Figure 1 (cartoon, helix red, strand yellow):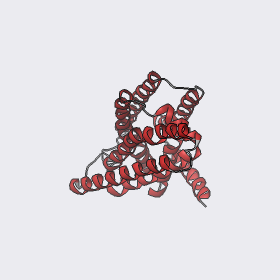
Figure 2: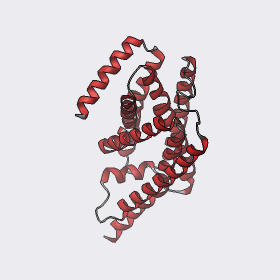
Figure 3: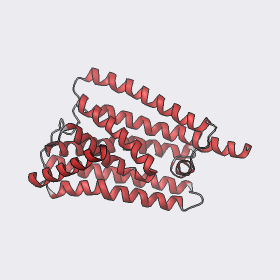
Figure 4: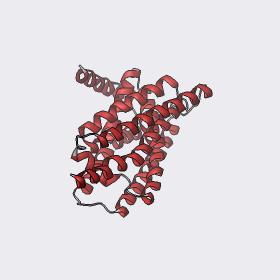
Length: 258
């Protein structure tokens, strides 16, 4: 049923794109988000996984290049959105009902951060070893020292701001202007968001897509990207702090004791 809905959505998008004559620069940005970004992420991860050990300098270089790429992509998307007349409200950058939005942002962040921390701790403390691909991923891209943690925190903030603008701000605004229903807009933007994290494998793609649906629904319901931006930052910050502690160091100790 979900597959049929997705295929129908793609067909509707194609029809709307052709009928609305979506500008070539907007299409190019979607091509980068849906094809180039997934390819780039997968190629980088394969390069890192091929190595027996990733040096700190390589992780720092990865963080710097990702930060730079995301800000450049965001700047280009914002520039073209402004050129085509998208408003701050359409892009989710308005802040309506500030007090209510602040309360939702704080409560949601507290809940999401807590659940993320507990989930990572559960995975690290369970008797079942962390799946090898996840452990290998954590060892290679998550910070292993305080020196690496600081730039990773900068990366987390960048991801929260830039990815939410690109996938929930820009992409949803463009798809909405193409005349698609809200549900389809949320689904398609979430699929593109999931593809950007395909380097994490199929499970990573699915979980990220589901997370994207949640963030997209909040952006639509609240009329702002701000809560999703803060929640996204919180998820990544906890991953950088608790991930190495529970998925890498604890696994090493367990293997040594075993």
